[in-house]
Length: 75
Image: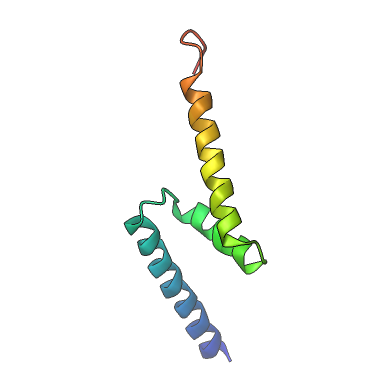
């Protein structure tokens, strides 16, 4: 049973590495931790298209906040 579990863990790691490489090739900007969160959300039933939309909106909003930041405010 232990060797079967080890095989499953190895397969999961290999799958994640492939997904991470695809993510990098597509320039998603997701690091390994954020990609893991997205995968887990999808496994829990979150619609991947909606998740992508939310991520894009968060990035857009945070970009606007940084651009509109007053010049004399502390970092």
